[in-house]
Length: 522
Image (tube, rainbow, N blue to C red; front, top):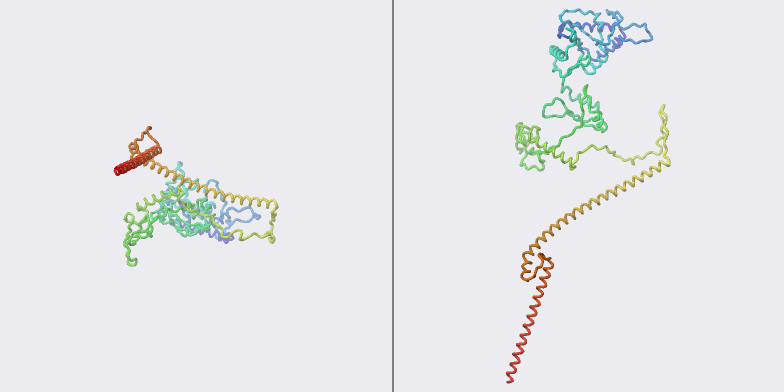
């Protein structure tokens, strides 16, 4: 391309070659391609890079700045190699410039396009539009419209979409229906929804270009069809991780896609022996293991011949045992999520959070040098700032702050010990309250039993002892005292009676003895 700039004859030959290609396309495709408006496609054999470079060359040719040699000819003023001189072109501010434009009438008249008019119409699209076409990987074509009446100068967007789609279909272009259409000023924006047009390697490369510390990007496999693909990856650098979450979007190709934090689902508790949920393999009660797919019992895994027909261990349906289509699995997941949310709300369990990276070495392992700036040479053109030496006031302040830190640490330790003591006192008070409540229950039961004893035993004894109960209810101690007094009186009476009986017996014996003696004397 540098040779084209330096050699005017070679540049004219290149432009004539482009004109011949355009005329060949006219003869091959015909005139009436699309009614009501015309669509022109550029040469698809030319790459975007060549198109961009040619635009730069011609923009240099048309817009020469004021230089110190005003008598220098423009590049396109040469007549060598069959080239024709091109007059100066006037640009209008409100009209869109046209590149490689072919005007076709509706009646189908074959109009000969000479090299002079064609050369005058070369390279009129602005550089920004050409750059956008190359950067966005867009096809190199544009559309011009010819009004059929005065009321409607430009067709509606939906009519344009239908006609463009029919034209591309006639050209055997495999394309889906347009999912987005709309006018943006003088530009008609067309869009096609393509869910999976990016391969894994391209996505991996684009992610690594945006996030340098990305590790192990993987496509998430779903059991059902989705319109888009989701990718999961790890970020080793915590700063890049937080920055990506704050940006909320990442560029993949020429598309900005959302990026969010990956939240893992609640892990299911299932057995790899019987493939049922609710327990692990070490607590399975099944006598033999089962196949994961067909659920047949496996005695010898080398002799097992799987039928490859999926069966569910939960509902015995025609799907895998842990499939998301199983109603039992869905109900178990819902119940598990509710239980996990309740446990998190109560504070019973806590989710693991990413902790800050703790350095392996301590700061004391690498002490500061006594004079680190002794051999330091200042860079060229840089002013060395004043070095701040520690003063007496700063050392005193640091000493006071360190003493305060020590006092605060001591106070925190004391507060922690006091909290532990208060907790122990609370536990003791709770224990005493429970013991008091138990004692009250025992006293109540004892009083009830004493009441029964009073009714069954003491009252009949009072009646037998003929104790006059003046009040309706006497105290239990009073009744016991009266009963003791009655028993002592009875004992005294019995002793007196026994003594009287003994005295009378003695008297009778003495009387009998005296009578016997008298009888002998007589």
